[in-house]
Amino acid sequence: MRLAIEKESERFRSIPNKADHHGLFMSGCALFRLQTSFSTARFLLRQHYWIELACIEKLIFEQICWSYNVRHLQGSKLYAVSPTSAVKAFKNLYPDAGIIYGLLNDIAHISPRRSKDYLDLSDTKAPGVFMVSAKQTAKCAFLLLVLVDMFQVCSEYVYRDYHKRFLYTVRGKDGGLRLKAKRKTQTAIQRFQPRLKRIESDEDDADVPF
Picture 1 (spheres, one colour):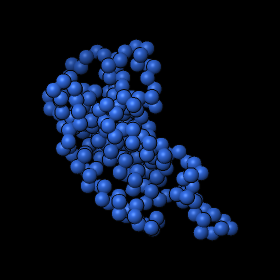
Picture 2: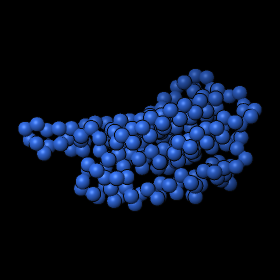
Picture 3: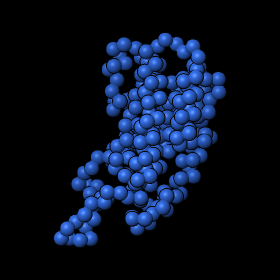
């Protein structure tokens, strides 16, 4: 995952003679700085801190959507776009964006409805709290793979006027971009899905390897 993000970042940073366009510049800067966010997500993933991981993933998701939205904007129009309001438009390029955002919000927002996921009620006199969970982290690991895919797709959209070769998107007859059906990131997502289903069906939440 780390190499995929770094490789794509270097790919668009090495493009010569990019247009002096405010939106393009800001989109690229936002995508480039997400390397740090992805690195933080990997650390939380290894520690099984699933709620904190979901929060970082939500930030990554919103930043990707924002980069997509401001690509063509300049001046005050660019500053008027907030990350949380940019999700709807990104669905034009990535149809599952709304579903992914809903899942991230559901995990990241601690609520009484989700208390069963992190409360240990085996001792009724002194209930505890699960700080980590391999089983819950598995879903976040799957969502992180999806975010890598989104990052690559968004990057190609932002720099579509400069790429000669497209790895994650294809041009339609109208000249617009759409998702490429066979792409490395999508293959990784599909490989992980059966593992996720096995983990989620396991009743043991403490030591589930993933």
